[in-house]
Image (cartoon, rainbow, N blue to C red; front, side, top):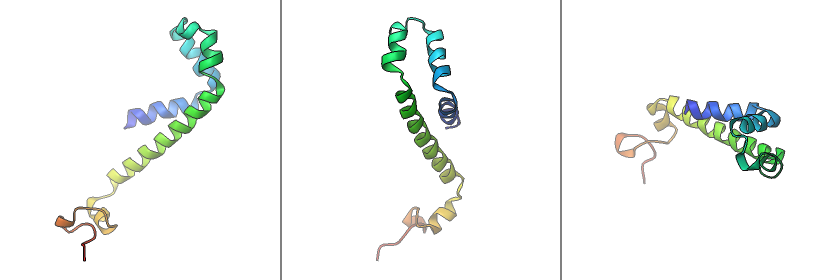
Length: 91
């Protein structure tokens, strides 16, 4: 989880031009270079990727929070296995 969050934060915090130049430096013939930067990886694509990464980081934060909440506290909140005394019992 930490690795995914790190990659997502790196994407979020890296400006479009820096990412574009980094990709092109790694593979100069990637999608014909200027065509790739002009038609494929545009500022609008970067913005959309930012929203995707922000959502991913939020989900990862929720998952981490869920893991950090003790099981007993989750049962008190209504989450848990009813056979073990957690959750709501059917009436």
